[in-house]
Length: 485
Ligand code: HEM
Image 1: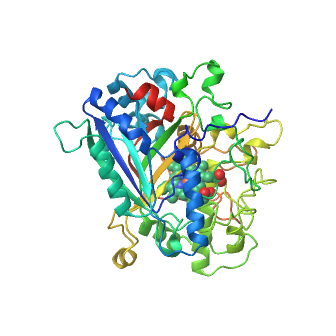
Image 2: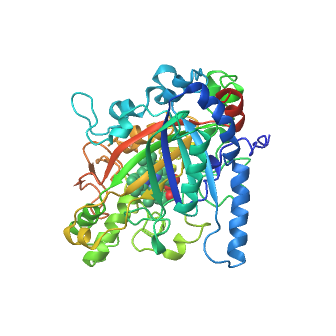
Image 3: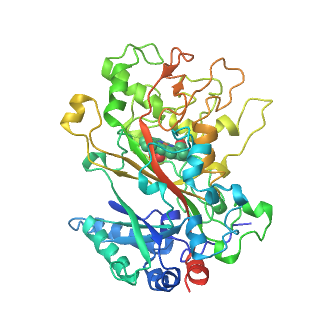
């Protein structure tokens, strides 16, 4: 049977559609007066942009473009999410959220999970030396404010501050930290700071997406939304989710710093001498191929599984082709794409779904996540390029949604990116190694040299996690019926 239509007016917009963004503010806050907060929240709820609202905004953006009107359409969208500590503070029973009980990453919180499962560098005494002190505190919630310009966002932030009485003795919240993200300028728009086009491969959703391009098959809505077919909590008990906990999603936020000059320096110092056909490469070409093999896509976004040794910008720009690859027929081969390349690690496609016998196929739909990150920090300066050293903070405000943190973000980071034996290739002498972008641990990977697949390359960490938290983004009904009073 066709899946029941989703209630697009009940689901927060960032989850399924992504709030339109040029600039974003993540405003992390604590609740200081519970009774007042729950009252104030009533006034805030009308500001929340739902999926239906985003779809309208996107139409307006298209119209604006079609009419060739100058500049960007003035537009903003607000979403709100709460941490487990937030629900504790509010006195709201959130057992209907965390299917994993006390062990659920949502309940444990990311501060602890970073050490126990995510592999963030930690001191012996269990402290996180790299983390920003703001994220070592208990954070109760986060407002995501998204829009066309910082002016629009600051106005929206002020509107929210007024609702919650910020700056008056009656305030019900306290800001912990606000982090601003910006889409990169000009031709780099849509590219993350290492230079690679991002945001290409996100899951399409049964019963929601109308345009399905060739690539991974659509997933059940419950992979992303709580309380729908595909939500693993329903396997525990079909009625596991109370009404207020349906149509929501778990948000994993990660404050990831990127060391761009150091990354570039590594590529410069380790150029591949030849491509997979044995053709000699100029040093710049060899460095570019090395970078593409670390990510699994060229900077243009073209997948190396389709264009293994030469970039193909036309392929990158074609939505019908740029996600249409499965690593098919490449079990036990790193010729076209290394096993540990970032996109193969985080979405191994046929490596699990069409494995060599006797291994049984593993459906990976339940591991898919909806990524909604944005860049932060300035472009590289001349001095940084010259010195090959990071002098200004920059990176990715990584955000992803899923119905289960255990199945989604946490699993991908811990069991795939950080695990050198994944994907499993029993007949292969070499281990894949770690994900060269996000892998934490002994950072070594094989397969970078297409003509010497077993050769290991050791690399420093180019991505440093400096904080984060797990949140739940409730439905509008959930906000009204249970969180506000
Ligand atoms: C894809 C960069 C962190 C999961 C990609 C792509 C790039 C990229 C360039 C390819 C574009 C695309 O397919 O959309 C980065 C950078 C990161 C980072 C620079 C850190 C600074 C993470 C983290 C996770 C993750 C922390 C999850 C634990 C994924 C997934 C895909 C992806 C699931 C799509 C794979 C596919 O379906 O083919 N990333 N990423 N990334 N990344 Fe990341």
